[in-house]
Image (cartoon, rainbow, N blue to C red; front, side, top):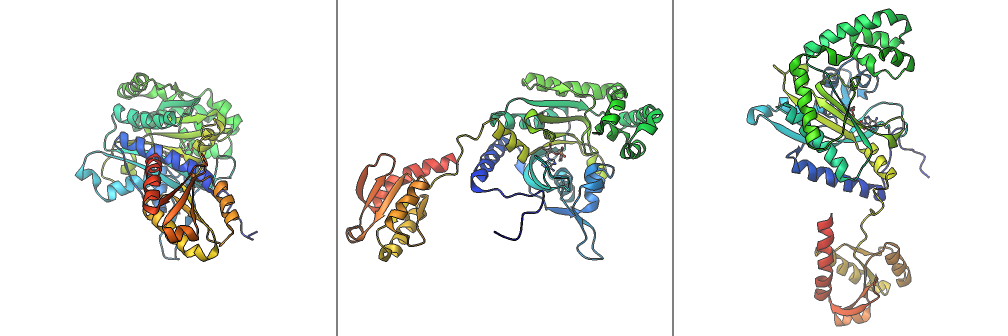
Length: 430
Ligand code: HAM
C-alpha cells in the first residue's frame, strides 16, 4: 500500500466508472452539436480578480471556497477556476470574438475546484458540463440553453428531476428590491446570524439563500422580488415559460430561488434530484448580461448558460439503474501463443491485428497457454487466435469463436477480413 492517499475531496476514476463518464460525455458532445454549440477549453487557473469581480465578492465561492495561490512574492494572485462562466466570458472578450460574429454558442466539460467541506456529492475537485450562449439574450436564447440541458437529462433516461425557475429582473428592479429587503429585515436584525447580518449590508439577496432554519423562518415572510419587477421583465419571463410549456418541459416557479453566484439577471433556474440527499442541485444557470461589464467590458453583453455537476449526474443515473448495460469494451481477439519461443512471432501478429484497427490483447508475461486462455475468458474476448509451430510453418492460423466454440483455420489475411467487420461495428458504437 502506498503511504500516500488521494487529497481529501478528490477521487480516482477507474476503468469501469470511466466507461460511464465516456458514455455521458458522448451524449453531451452529440447533443451540444445538434443544438449548434462548439466546444471551448479555457485555462485551469486565472487571475483571482476575474472570479472576485465575476462571481461576486460576497458569495460563498469567492468568500471561502477558492483555491488561491501566489506563484511568487511579486506575482499576481491566481485561483484554480471554481466555475467556467467567468473564464469563458473572459476568453470571448479578450479575443474580441463578438466582432467576428455577434453570437457565440460554446460548451464545455471541465474540471473545477472549490474548497468546500467534502461530503456525498460535494468534492473539492469536480467536473461540470455546461453551455454558454453569448451575444443574445432573448427569451428564446435562455429557453434554448434550458432545453439543451433538459434534453441531455432526457436522453440519458433520467426521471423525477425538478426544474425550478425564477426571474431576478433587471438591475434597477433588484436595486429597489434590495432596499425593500433591507427595510423588511431591519426589525429582525438581532435574530440574524453573523453572515446574514453581513449579507444584509452588502448583498441582501443572498440572505434568501441562507441554510440556517432560524433565518429561513424570517425569509418566509420577506417581500418577493417578483412584485418589484418592471413590466418588460415580467413579459420576458413569461415568454421563457411559454417556450418551456411548448416543449413539454415541466417546471415550478420558485420566487425565492437565488443562485450562489451574483452575475445573474432575469431568468435563473436550478434542477434538483431527490436521489441526491443534502447536495441535491444537479445543475443550474440563467441569464448574466452584466458579467461582461463587471469584467471590464465597455457595455453589457447579453448572455445565458447553465452547468451540470457530472458527479451528481452520474450518482443520480447510478441510483436510477441507468448504467446496468455499460461495461468497458472487451478486446475482440486474444492472440494465444503456444510456447515461449513463439512469443515474438505472436507479438508481431498482434501488432498487425492492431494496425488493422482490431482490439487485440496478448500476454506480455510469457505465461503458459492455459494461463493465456484463462485470461482470454476472464476479459471476455470473442475470439482466440492460436499461434503454434504448425501455424508459423503453414501461415494458417486457428481462429476460435469463444462464444460458439467454432474453430476455423485461416490465413492471416482471412482472419483480418473476419475480424475487421465486428471491429468496425464496435468503433461505430463508440
Ligand atoms: P453552480 O450552481 O455553482 O453554477 O454549479 C453548477 C453545478 O455544479 C451544481 O448544480 C452542482 O451539480 C455542481 N457542483 C457545484 N459545486 C460542486 C462540488 N463542490 N462538488 C460537486 N459538484 C458541484 C455554476 O457553476 C455556473 N457557472 C452555472 C452557469 C453557467 N451559469 C451560467 N452559465
